[in-house]
Image (cartoon, rainbow, N blue to C red; front, side, top):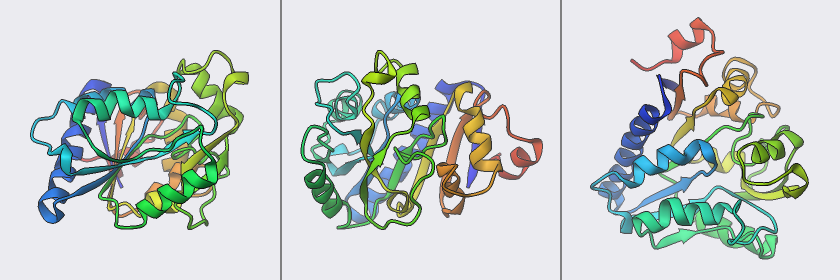
Length: 253
């Protein structure tokens, strides 16, 4: 695991997009296909904008998997992550091979179909954020580190639901669903590479807990420290609580 830290998040987003495009291009060159997982949320806005503007990516050779989705939310809802991916990634690139989680459908059927698809071959690169409560995808604390199921139903804790209100997706916490479908922790870790984009001061406490505290279910993204190829992209605000020793040991030149 390595940190890359930038003064502001547009610079962060551009650098993360360069790495993401390189990973996609490498997979296409090696296997004529890149299988990717894309995250959503306001922390990914600038990154996806930079990635979709990057020239030279053969998006027709990219297969897209959805990281998580609320149960019961249709694509017409402003908070739909399917809507988010459609508008911010799919429409801009023309990706045609995709596996989206339809929040209004039967959860068991959604999980079965998505799980069958993702198990067919390894994921080349996963783009992920980290929640204000340390969640990875929608795996809130205490996260399930043990299940081998690729996708699972999860209960959303109050901190996670409040974050969704704070980001403007819902009017109040009562409107936020209490359950979602999420890619599991073990499935995320099966990705060949993980690029985690984590800007803003509101993520600083979670960054500190996940990368300076113990690895465990109460800080779900702490598990990223066990993966062989993880790059964490921070800005000066999200990195603001990290100790000098952590920064010295883990920051890329």
